[in-house]
Length: 443
Image 1: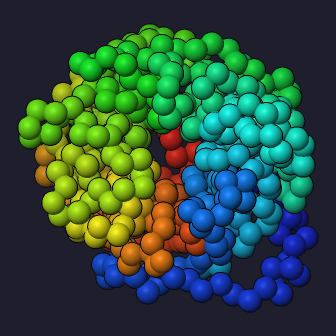
Image 2 (image 1 turned 135 degrees about the horizontal axis):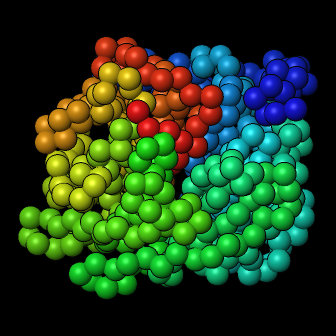
């Protein structure tokens, strides 16, 4: 039985426990916001980044979706959440796996989770001891939503900070691009056989090209679009790498063909300014590449009024050539007490042909941006939380559009749901599932 069809059975199993819980406070309903941004449901998961020992840290990280389920990555495993009623999302299960980052990819009954750095002694994943020094990917069978099973561990030389999953159904497999936060000038390409995920293994490594400053320190994250486009963009150090993974420009999912790099300079001619490319996505027609920068490692207040625009922008490039088309700069300055960059985002699949991005920006919150004209991008809606007190790492790790709702993974509080009432978002294509870094078709 697939994850999508078995959801109702799992919810019934835990209904009594969920019903007995006291409803969680939906903090996102009290934030400053635009009138067209409507706060809906909340799935509580309280956590602190600074304070608890590393093995006990279980803050909320990235998101993936399958049918009426949201999978919320966590520094200690991942949460499975029923989102069939966006006004009242309910946690089904929290799978424990106490290695940091917890970026996730979901494909039907399979979930792949990133383990970022060498494991100290005494760590566990699904109750199984994790060998000291392990870093890489864990693969879970999630056919039983209330009891996911760890079925494979794939050690990788530089660990896995994030993961991007790309279906290769002709070969009955999921290709996973595993990305490192620093230290290695390559991207790991892993094969997860859909019929035998226990046999998951490293296929090969793809070298990453440097720019004017040389070393690139691997990919932080990878965005992929398939369909008639077949491009992959690696948000790598100061020089993003763009690859072809099929027709019309050659290469394959397993063996991408390098095309070009993109660097960005501030007004003073400096490359990057103390940060690195963080995320990448494409418009659904494959015409525009969207890149975001992360200075300060996500923990610094890089969205103050005095900060240069490069630190708080989405950048837009011609996907065929890398030529710069424009940028959007966060228009609402943040305080010196708020960690902030433009962090994780996706593009809404609009049949109208408009380009709209939904982004999570740490303590700047969630923003919706229309960049149909990349040279003149405009804000559509926003929800900006007040500074976390007492001061700590907080805010929106990720916010993504999924089937007309916005889902925000808030580091300290859990999953928030919004809906935006604006005609700009009308006519979106409904998706059966979503790994936000992977656009499985083109429009």
